[in-house]
Every structure is written in C-alpha cells, then in structure tokens.
Length: 373
Image 1: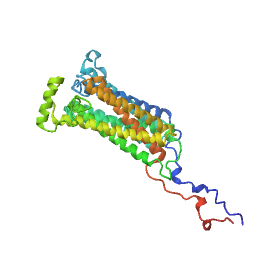
Image 2: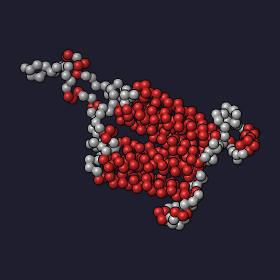
Image 3: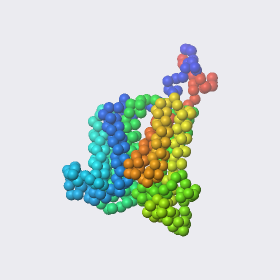
Image 4: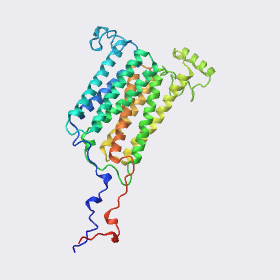
C-alpha cells in the first residue's frame, strides 16, 4: 500500500470551476478589434454632429430622405451645403461612415479565424443598431415627428455603449484567461454601483435630450438658483411673473411650466449623476487602485464630470451657443461610455454573482482522506 495523498497539496480537480475561464476567442485583437475600435471612435463625432443639428434647429433643413433635395445623398452638390443644410447633410454622411464600419465589422467577424458566435452576434447587433438608428432618423424627417428625434438621440447614446463594448470584448485583455469571480464576493459592490451609475447617467441623458428638443435649455436662465429662488414657479401666476422677468431682463421668449420643470429636472439629475460618479470613482481609488483597467477610467470619469458640469453652466450663462451646447451633449456621451466601460471591466474581473464556495483540500477532515493502495 502506498502513502496517503498529502492533504496539503490540492488535487487538480479541486480548483473552483468558476475560476477556470476559457477566452472568448484565443488571443483577441486582430482586424475585428481594430474595426470595433474605429466604429466606437467614429460614433463620438457623430453624436457631436447630431448635437449641432439640434442646436442649430437644422433637423428639417433637408426635408427628404434618403435623398437630399432629390439628389442621391452621396452626389448632393457641395455648393448647396450652406446654413442648416450643412449640419444635417454632414450628419447623414457621418452616419453612413459608421454604417460602413459596422458592415466591415460583421464581415471581419466571419472571416477572421477562431472568432466565436458571441462575437459574430455582437457584430450583427452593432450593424442592426446602426440600421435601426438610421431608419429612426429618416422617419423623423419623413413623418416630422419631434418625439422620434428624442428617441433618435437616446438610441445614439445606447449605441455608443454597444460599440464600446464591441471594442472592449474583442480586445486581448478581455479574452485573456483569468479568474472570473472571487469566492469572497469581492468586487460585487463595485459592479452593482457601476450598473446604478450607468443607469443614472442614461436617464439624465434622456431628460437632457427631451429638454433640448422641447427648447427648454434656457427655461431657467440663471444659476445656481431658479429665478432667484431655490425652486422654480409652480403656479400659472408664478409663471406669468417669471415670463415678465424673462422679457425685461434677459430678452427671452416666454416658457411654459412644463419647460421650466423639465429644465429643473435636468439640473437635479446633474446632482444625482455627480454623486454617483464620484462615489464610483472613490470606490475604485480606495479599494481597486491596483487594477489599472479600473483606475484609468475612474480618474477619467472625474475629469469628464468636471468638464461636463462646466459646459452645462456655460451653456446657460452664455445663452446656449451651439458649439458649447453640442460639446455638452458629446461630453455627456463620454461620461456614459466611460462609466459603462469601467463597469464592464469590473464584471469581467469579478462577475456579478457570488462564486460558489469551494472547500480546500486542506480543510477536509482527516476522516475524508483517501488512501491509494
């Protein structure tokens, strides 16, 4: 009879299954990753250009779709690219660039060796989202529906996150084998806070898009108070009073109570977003500073938040100049996608659910020892 197996040396099959992870596709990177990064990068200027269209009220400057004043969109003479037509037409052309990149992404997912169906379905989702977004934009023009313009703006933000996730999930870092979950549950709080932060930012962007399209960006023209008070008017009489002040003091058009409270809701949302972003960044800096993939976006989030708050203040104080207001939209998208990337990386590192507790061999009672004869 041979000696019993040492209890201090765990058997190979004692390694927790949750900690053995195969890569999505070996190595990652390649043309698929490059195209995914290009798609995500091209989406950012597209969102900024969309902001310019709204800021210049140029959404209906080209009243037909998919043509441009009867011309094929790609053959529309540049001599007609003036005024609002310039902003709307170039926005359409940039949308086409993103669409072409999405098509190339799908092609690469089927041609690049060792790419799994998860990556292919993700590439198809990116392409489908581009097509859906383009149709939304076209219907907004054809049907002249303002609500479709709001949906179009909100879907753009969600697509930015989808494109960023495609770039992230095709990277070498994402596909390198590593423990997925910590048996102690470490990181679950970070993941939950990240998800809550992303949701809060996205809701704030929805309110912001609604405010912009309903011309409520200057419904409260002073800061930090609202017409010199903590709360804006809540009654028709109070509204009449502030509209008189708007006309005499700021030479601004009258507004409705709905516009006033929509604007005020956006300001409240900025407070909630700031709290969530700072809490998320503080958690990373305090407990996860040794993870560069978490530390970098956390620091970037703080910087982006400061820029975004500054742009929001300037938008009001400078009476909503188009470039500043559009930059406010674009940086808001960066805040969303940065928090999304941080959260996605936290999920990749720690998972969402607590890993099952696996008993180490050294903890098994002596009566459970096995002897090999």
